[in-house]
Amino acid sequence: MLAGFANIDLLHCSTRHLFRFSECDCLVSQHMTEKASIVSSLPWTEKYRPKTLNEVARDDSAIDIIQKFAQDGDLPHLLLHGPPGTGKTSTILALAKELYGNNFTNMVLTLNSSDARGIQVVRDEIQSFASTSRPFANFFKLVILDECDSMTKDAQFALRRIMEKYTYHTRFCLVCNYSSKVISALQSRCTKFRFGPISHDAMRRKLQLIVSSERLSITAESIETLIRLGEGDLRKAINILQSAHLSSDTGKINDNIIFATTGNMDWRKVDGLLHTLLNDSLKNICTYLTNLRAEQNFALADILTPLCDSLFRTHLPHDVRACFLRALADVEYSLSFTSSETSQTLLLISTFVQKRNGFRIE
Image (cartoon, rainbow, N blue to C red; front, side, top):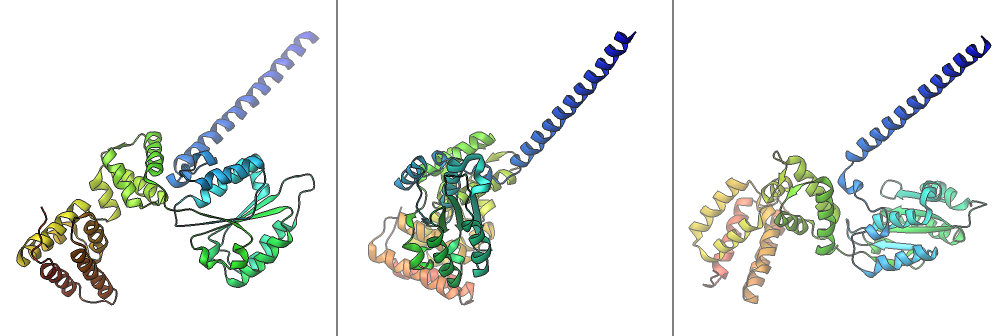
């Protein structure tokens, strides 16, 4: 009898444990599902942000040198500067993850100086983090100041003293677009790396990786369009790709969707406009431009930069090209002072007709 009761108790106990294990499995599964849902809804610029230095989409020596810092475990103060979207923040975050691994949150302080740019933030948040050392850690901590060119001069001078005082156990990485806005006292304490526009090959590889991962339907020609619109800014190109994907009803991405999403004119139409300006009569040019504006719904200011690019791609005598570029610059300057768009359009047309001197292109 007692043995029977014992067996029943063991059965109940096993059942309770099995229920608890099953409940834990359900919670883990639910957590993983929620995490996957959050990752899938992230902007692609964050979803595909490099996790290691090898994933950074750049082909220059700066990444090799910074990678050597990570391998040696010896890091100087850094100043990364250059145009937006060229991988500055991604590089230093990838470096920090390689250095600290799972201890990233405890060893790294990341601040965006465009929001926290005053001297009080330097004295309170940055100094309190930099001044505390970890007794059992034989590694330095890292402070990342993004957009540090937005910091006030007083904050930069206060930061200079903190960098000197706590160098033994804290390193600083300053990230900015314009190094000229960072005081020379900070620049002299840092190893500087300039991040130029990303090469077309590196942008192409990254965009093709995203296209493959997201299983997008896009032509090679449209990828080249994204690279051209990005102008060396990979973040801009990725954002355009995601916007075009969301805008497509059929799931296919082509040049028409990309230009409609960005509001840019198709440069084939711009080349056609330039051909008309250089060859047709004044009346035909006005008619062509009126029809094009009705079709594309663009402002005169929207076509000045594309026209300038098209002029450089067209074979023209140097003096003729210089004259046309001067006309585009004058029109843009006049439009910035709320000049009449109609009068500036007529001025642009008449300048082309007057200065082309019988020159023709086919």
